[in-house]
Image 1 (cartoon, rainbow over the protein chains, first blue to last red):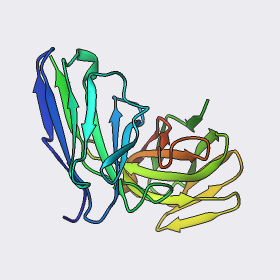
Image 2: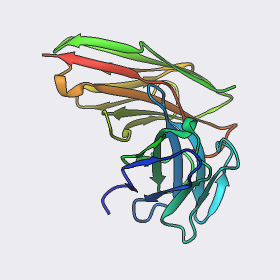
Image 3: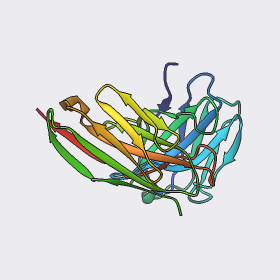
Image 4: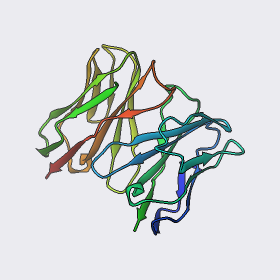
Length: 114
Length: 112
């Protein structure tokens, strides 16, 4: 596609439920990043992939958060036992290679945990 | 600890009134500094990358400059469509490759 796409655009869930957020990067981009943005804040790094492997997951807040990219393209961010504090916009970005190549962002998934 | 600070938090301008946004950073070694524009309900849109002190880049009414400690985004004769939040981010040599560290942004409003 022309840009990074994310689905769903909005997700409302109840505390304790499991959610999956999907990211489809720009074709040919080998690096894929997940960020989380709370209201009035800049995006916060969660995890990034170079190809299929997670190169750095130091931003994941705890072990309820997990992400995969099995074929080196689409990625899924998985959140178990959701908490109200997980409510935020989850942004995905991709770049040609990891490093200082510009990252192109998707529109985000707004997650609301009731 | 890495830190990116943007000022002011919010800026209101009249159409045509030029101004500058500031981004100061503290990193162990700068790999790159990025400017993004973010409209409400959308993801950040890439504007510029700067790599070394003294570098400048321009795009339409925007010009970004870089020193060893800060970057400026100059807006010349802004129009209402320039209203958005402008985000600054850095990549640190001492950190993860490509891990963008963002500031909180400057919310710009341009009134006609």
